[in-house]
Amino acid sequence: MKQGAINRCIILLLKGLLVLGVVTMLCGCSINNIVSNALSESLGSSSGSTNPLLSDNDPELVGDALPFTLKFFDLLISSNIDNPPILLTTGQSYIAYSSVYLQGRALVTPRTNLDEQDRLLARAKNLYLRGQRYCMEALEKRHPGFGEALFNTESDESIAIFEELTEEDVPYLYWAALGLLGAFSTDTFDFELAVGIGRAAKMMDEAFRLDPEYGDGAIHEFYITYYAALPEALGGSVERARHHYQEAVRLSSNNSVSAHLALATGVAIPAQDIEEFITLTNKALAVDVNVDLNRRLLNIVKKREAQWYLENLDHFFIDYESTDEVN
Image (cartoon, rainbow, N blue to C red; front, side):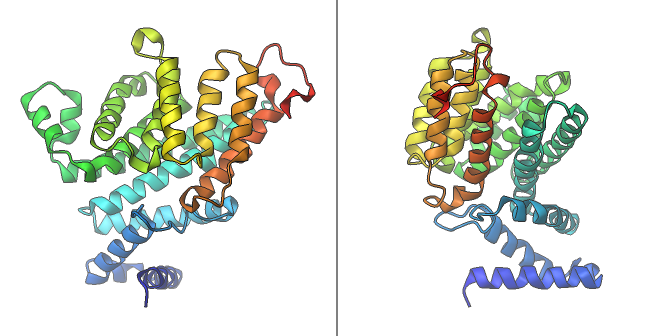
C-alpha cells in the first residue's frame, strides 16, 4: 500500500476513534508517534509531493474541515510536545486558516457590517498568534535559547544560535515570522506587536539567507508587501518590492496569483495608479489554477479576492469612475 493511502487510512481511523470517544487510547502509546509522523509527512510540504489540502479545488470544503483538523493537532501536541514537525504543521495550519478564512473574509465583508469585520479580524489575530507560538516552540525545541536570541541578536550566544541554523529551519523561520506579521496586519495599533516586527523581519531574513528560493518564491512574495509597506526612512523601497515581485513570478513560473496581487495592493494602490492595478489584477486572474497543484487552493481564493478588488475599485482609488477600463 502506498504511503499516501496509509496516511489516509490512519486519518480515517482516528476520526472514528474520536467519534467513539476513545481519544485517550492515543495518549502515551506507540501509535501516537506513528500518527504524528504520518500526519507530518502527509500534510507537510514535502518536496515533489502534492499536498492534499493545498491542492483541493473547493475552498469551502477545506475551510469547513480545518477547525476539526486544528483541534486534532492540538490534541496530538498535548501528548507529543517534543515533536517539532507536528508543532510546525499545527502552527502553519492556524496561520493559513487565519489568513484565508478569517482575514480574507473580513476583507470582502461589506463596510456596512463593521461589527462582523472586527469580529473576524479579532479571531484572525488570536489564531495568527496561536500559530506563531507553535512555530516558535518548534524553533526552541530545535535550537534551545532561540527565542531569547531574537531579543538580543548581537550577543555571542545569539550569534552562535543563528550560526547553527540550517536550510531545514527555513519553514520554521518563515511561518513564525508570517504569523507575527499576519497578527500585526489585523491590528496595526497594537504597540506590542509593532515592537515585534523587527524580530519577525530578522527571522525572515535568516530564512532568505538560508534558502532564497524557498516555496518557489514565497519569501520574495513576503518582501513585496514588506518593502512596499515600510516608510523609506525605515528601509521601505518600491524598487525593492518590484525586484522581489519579478523574482516571485520567475520562481513560481508565473503560477502565483498572490504575487501579482501583492504588488497591486502594496504599490499600485498607494501610488493611486489604477492602470497598473488593473493590469496586475488581470494578470492574477489569468493564472491557471490547475498548473501548480500545491498552489491551487490558495490561487482559487486569491482569484476571488482579485475579482472583488476589480468590482470595488471605488473603495481604493479616489478619482475612479465606473467605466469599461476594468476589462
